[in-house]
Length: 573
Image 1: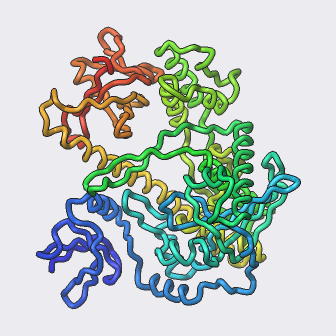
Image 2 (image 1 turned 90 degrees about the vertical axis):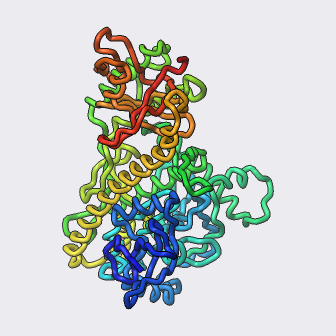
Image 3 (image 1 turned 30 degrees about the vertical axis):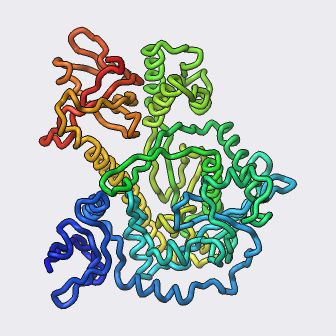
């Protein structure tokens, strides 16, 4: 049996590509090499399928879905002794926690319980106690630091922790006792935190709820499958969520209308289709509570923080856009208003004198043609943003409007979460500062890994998007040029040497390079200084406007530059 090693890993834990009479070239399988043989343990993807192409992307970045033998041995020990009955744990198992997540989520990091109080609300937010299982010096810890994060591709997740932990022993699944680090917050009616404390506890979630279920449960007068206390908690969750949404709006924190999509493999297994993500109120409430806990966790670690005290926080920092970028945005919005003849009283914005950017963006129309142009303006605001990073120095997070922010809420998917839980527990227990030097060294590796993982996930998204474009447009090349599909879309961005068009269906964003626009026009082109139009250099006539609708078609694939070449016709041509 021929065997090609694709990843460096112990022989019993290797993702391999096998080619012989039984396993076809391009198939992905798990094999166990032994004495010149490599018997197949599990088939992962058949050659030629979209899943095999997804695996090829993962392998190209040396992402291994399997774990070394030492990790497996530790997992076996933890399964035998999960620490649920540890005497030091508090026992709020009578509290009706529940998880609220996507319908297919298995690694349940958070569970919540909310009650209304005389003063406002009490929020109990339980986080999976992954740091108890993943400890410094263990093979699990080393593997998690190396991976830094779980990675997500269509049809494939490369987990940071073995699934026996992330989808079972650590996961806050319903009906079973689980270890949790619980943040308890008392808030007033305006959503201000009045008191905060932590519990190391064993909890029992009552239900695994999907986002789409919650509105129906809240609207129903009676329910038979959930205990009454859980319904009361969901009602308080809704009320608290609405308070937090309003509080953030008053604080001037920008909320963009992001038209995000998730790519999924088609039922036939050969293509990718984009599914537009929802922005339902329940998801916003859930997001606001998660952000609140990340802010409060960082504040708690920062309070009383002194040099060499043994506590080594990690912060999620996000610089505000520089004033020069906001000035460019102001000019660009003004140019869009002029280009499309929009009412200045509704559409104009000034950096000084027009109120906050958040209030302006929220005031724009949402439906029809006006809503489409508003979405284009939102996108211009999005691209003014700086990147967020992990850091050991506290600094503001512009995106959430907080002086400090952490990443406590994804401990099974991000190593930063495990490390922050460890530091939280050490602060609670008053750990001796003697370990500070070791923790600083670990923290540096965790920060580097967290930033590296974020960049890698962005690259994976780009490669998967390119794969989606290839599968969509390759069939077009088999047709004569006049018969190729003309796909309607909107010009949503002009930046540097390219413009961006968002197709109506499928909902994909594609790049069109200016030199290809010039080739189609038969003459040189140039971009307006405000980045809102592309004009013919000879006479200044507008060829493409930001926010304009058009019909995109494939002209060819440029092998030398490894990119698609498109034509963009006016919608009424």
